[in-house]
Image (cartoon, rainbow, N blue to C red; front, side):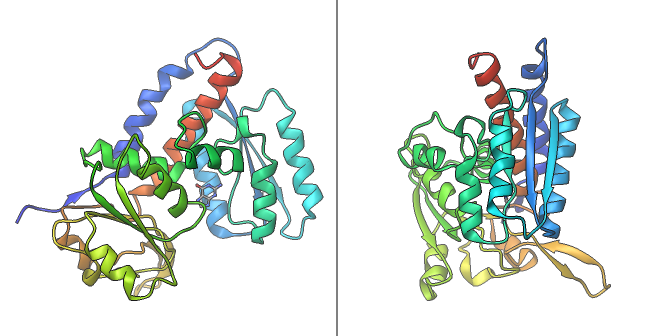
Length: 292
Ligand code: GUN
């Protein structure tokens, strides 16, 4: 039995960012991305800080507005309107989750679709659903595709099972993987799929787990030789009392079965951030340089 291949998102993301650098070498102002965070969600605080640090390392400017979790929708919308109208800002990102789903949908839809570097505006989501390649594609979906391609994983004609139908990961990933540029056959299962979820995953060549439920997927879900992508990252307290991130997949039990698997952390996470930087540079090129 061959050793399990680790799909190392840190290495692939770093290479992607290095390849992005020459595109930033232009006269005039560098790209700028604005982040909106609402409330005190610890994971959002961490992710936005991480995205801003990577932006800075590339010479991309960033700014942050942090609003109280009780902020009125009008306050959120007027912040986004100001950024929409500001020509010195190329990309806008509203970090999810917002305190409620309605507010999140309102905020995503209020971002100028030309600055929507997260791809969550209905316009960009619609372009993805229509199999058009001219919109912004959500970063985690794009990152998973890029990571699998970097390791030479063939997806055309393969069966990919996705666990989780979130608008942030599962749904856009399903659309991207079944597009005419990828040609995978996709099954999406979720919390109401019951026993179907396990049997669909067992029949899949590639299993992507984005359920947000620590160690949901064990060895009985995965067939021998499958490729497993773990999007989950939940902080749990270990026996030593330290908090550490664990994935949606029970890595120790599942990895020996797999042809390849992503670690948590260091798998999908760095890819999401790298793809965001790619989207920001693209938004800047489109706005400032006519896309050239
Ligand atoms: N929350 C979890 N992942 C993401 C992401 O990729 N973008 C945003 N905006 N929020 C998230």
